[in-house]
Length: 259
Image 1 (cartoon, one colour):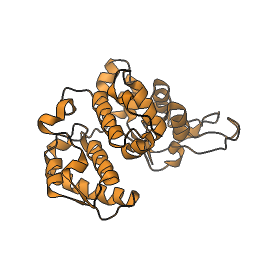
Image 2: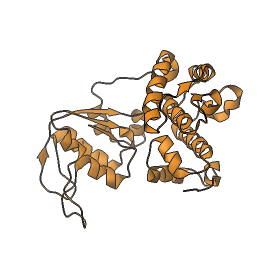
Image 3: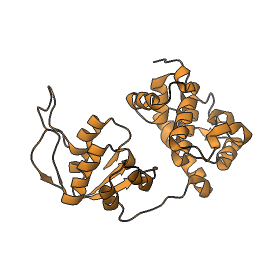
Image 4: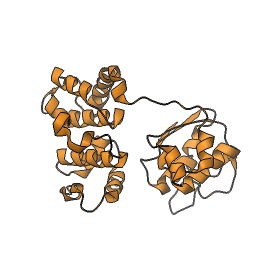
């Protein structure tokens, strides 16, 4: 049972994770959360480093006590599941900075699998490209798209500081915007070599890389936030929240705010 912790605001994420009791608010019906639905199986929390301190405390209780309460409820519900978490953030650094609970960190850090960056496993790129072309081609109503040799060569030589998600987003944008059935290097809008500028600077933080990528996607869709959110694989409110985190003088704020 998967859940992306970065895809929802805290209030919605809490209800999605723990479930909610009927009558908490007008018109709200009782709904089971991912924890309860994963009973007897496995719960996968992606981007666990994005959990707020309050949700970290509640997740710690699930891990330690193997029980939880639905939002608005008082009943303690036992749960038996395997918990799998993933993050692209440095949790040890977050613990030292007081941004992530140390007790939760060590509870989660039982079996650790370090995934090598995409630039160190380039033979995976053609397999991932084939998968994304088929998946998003069907999703966007453009099945049968192909990649030119130049485009594949560009992907194979890209440093991909954003790893698989950067590759996925680049292909999503190309599939959505390519004018023909053959995706060219220009359709990918990759920035490599000397033209890459700061986007390939390995000293950039993940937040700066994310900002630059969101800026490029918004520019590619002429500032249309709904289209940009679709290309990025997030909802429009999440995109707006991320944009609000950027400094006021960032170029991203100057992009037209088309609906």
